Length: 494
Image (cartoon, rainbow, N blue to C red; front, side, top):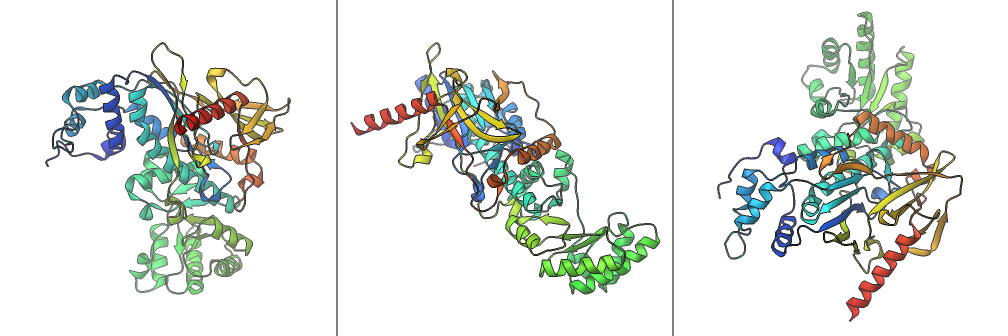
C-alpha cells in the first residue's frame, strides 16, 4: 500500500492520529448511533505508585496542552483513514464520517493538576469534560504523554533525594526508548530535580542546562592517557572534567592531577574527574584524597555507571566522596518499572439539557473500581505540612464537612482540624476548547517539585515501606460510589 504522505518528526509528536484505532472505531460508533453529541466527563488517574514509592510526581501537562491545541484531522489524516479496511475488505469508515472528522475541533473543558505536584493513586491528574466523541479520541495521547513523564519525573525525584542535595545530571539519551522518549525523559527528569542533561536537543527545546565530559574513545584515540588528557584540557580549558577509568583509575587520577596543574598555570582550573566503573566508593575516597593533597579541593568527582536511587543511597552510606551523579539508563527507562498504570475512565454522561448520569467501572479487583462524578482534589495542610487529600464531586458543591473516607476501607476515616487550610489541585486549562492556562516555564515546575518535597513528611518519601499518604472520598461521593457499585452488581446478578 502506498501511503498518502510521509510523516515528519513534528507530525509524529502532534498528529491527532497518535491514538489507538479503537478510539476511532468507538468515535465512529458514537457518530452512527447519534450519541456523539452527549456530554461526558473522563478522569485520567493511576492505581498504584511506581517503584514501591509513597508518591508520584505529576509531569507531562505542558506537552499534553500542546497536543490538545493541535487537535485536528487534516486532509492527509482523512485520506489515510479512508484506506483502512474492515474484515470484508471494504473501507472501515464511511466517507461522511471522515468528512465529519475533518471538521471536528477540540471543544472540551480540561482541568488538570500542575506539573511538579505530588499525586497519589485514584486522584484525577486530568479531567476532560465535553462532547463524548472528542473526549474519547484524546484519551490515548493524554495517557501516552502523562503516563511516561509522570513515571520518569517520579524516578528523578527519588534519585535526587538519594543524592541528598548533590547535583544529578541526566545522562540517558543513548539508552532512552527512541528519540521522542529521550526528549520526554529529559524534560520530566529536569522537573523532577535533575540539574542538567546530556541531551543537547532537549537543552535547545526546553532550556535545560546541558553538561558533558568525554568518552573512553577520546582517551583510546591517543598514544597515552596523559596525552589524551592534555589535548582535551587544551581544547576544553574552561570545561575540563576528565574520565579517568579507561585503563587504571588511580593512575588516571594521577594523570588528571598533572594535567590540572598545567591547566592552572595557564589560568584555568580542573573542573573534576569522572568515575564510570569499578568500586565507586573506594575509588572516590582515594581520588578525593589525591585531589585534595594536590591542591584541588574544588575539583568535582563525578560518578556514572548504571546508577539509581538505591545504588546512590548505598554509596552515600558507604561514605563515597562523589559530588556529582550522572544517572542515565535506569532513570530514562524507569528501570524496574517500565510503565505507569494510568487509565482514563468515564465518570459521568448526559444528553443535552439533562442531569448528569454518574458512571462507575466495577471489578472484582478493588483497586480497579473507578470513582464517579465530576471530580476535584482538595489537599489539606497544617503547619506547613500536607496531611491528606479529599476527592469530591463538584456537582455537589464544596464539601460540607472536613471528613473523608478511605475508598477501599469504610472503617478508615480522617478528620481535618478546623485550623487546617486547603487548596483545590485541579486548575482550568481549556474552556470550550480555548486554552485559558499558560504552562509555566520548566524551572518554575521544578521549583514546585522542591516545594512539594518540603511539604511532605520524610516517612512518605522514604524508599522502603513508605507511609501511606491519606487519600479519601468526601462522604457524599463515597456514598454515591458505594451505591453505584451495589446497583451494578445487583443488575449483573439478574
